[in-house]
Length: 232
Ligand SMILES: Nc1nc2c(ncn2[C@@H]2O[C@H](COP(=O)(O)OP(=O)(O)O)[C@@H](O)[C@H]2O)c(=O)[nH]1
Ligand SMILES: [Mg+2]
Image (tube, rainbow, N blue to C red):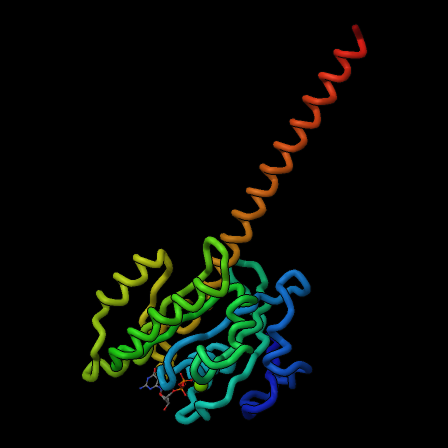
């Protein structure tokens, strides 16, 4: 497993090495320029974006992570017997104020939208993040996984499981309630997102192959017509 961490946060595992790029530049390149799937973690402050990311990448639960730190992590995993290189951006702050966020809203290939099951407002904010993605990404189907974090805090629950399920149905995306604290359902969030990204890539490849075949048969038809004309 290879994992690289950008500056800012501490290096929690011995196999971590600093990423050469800043989080901003790491996400400035289009997907076509490298093997990495660019994943963006979005959600209200305090919902557990960093905790979720750190659990996935480093198998560690952070009791405190500076809420203003925005970092990217490179991570390699096997999903469905295929290797996937991930470039994960753990965002921080208010999305509507920074142009840099506009950039990763455009270049992200997949998004994890998080809320906390203990915070109704964070659930409403999740809907706003989806609107932002729709506004900036400008593509038909955007791979998204909806996450209701802090499922270990059942006694403080303010958002029902059915609310998350209904929203994910509306968005036609996978949904998981997670606990970053207990490392519950953490991997499946990222795995499902990669599956969504791969499905989209596959559909796009099939569509462009169909276009190519259509074009080829058109060319053949024209060639035949010309052949017939010159025969006469
Ligand atoms: N009980 C519980 N606390 C969590 C969980 N995930 C994060 N936290 C705590 O919630 C606070 C905010 O988490 P953080 O990852 O910094 O949130 P972020 O601002 O979205 O990145 C921290 O005190 C975390 O320890 C969880 O699944 N369960
Ligand atoms: Mg954070």
